[in-house]
Length: 208
Image (cartoon, rainbow, N blue to C red):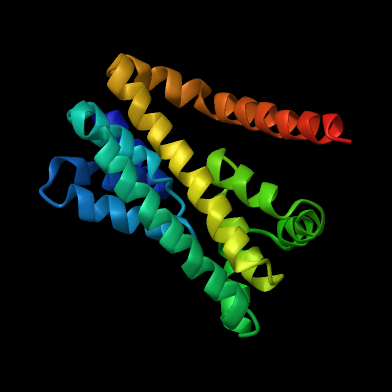
């Protein structure tokens, strides 16, 4: 390994955190680390669980669905924890101050609040399935009192679809799919979401 990447890592705390997440794939604690990462990312951790999930799927394609299941379960539980933070702790100044300073902006918070008034289920699903930060949705869902059952259903569907899609792609195409996921997976999930929403809208119009 050359000195350049090391120097670059020292200057970039987020890159060091990314590498720290990846290193768990080479340890006996890979699944507990995946669970913890998926749980924490749903409310405050900046690195998405896909990073470690992809590394594990590359190492063992046959167990990809097992990894995706743990990832989905932990992410939904973490989403509920985020919901609880918004519902029960947001009035504490140090809690809301932390999230509005380090996790998302006041403008983002206000914007998501307006979206909840119009879309409810869909805003949760879209954030759970696409690269939109899920943590923003979990916290604000609690703050604005979104229906908990709806929140859980949308989270389960969106998070499971996202992580199982990653596992399936590796199982079907192997490690070469890694570059595709890194460069275009976000666009694919957004396009899939738009098609799904469009399909529901069309069914609604036809049923009138």
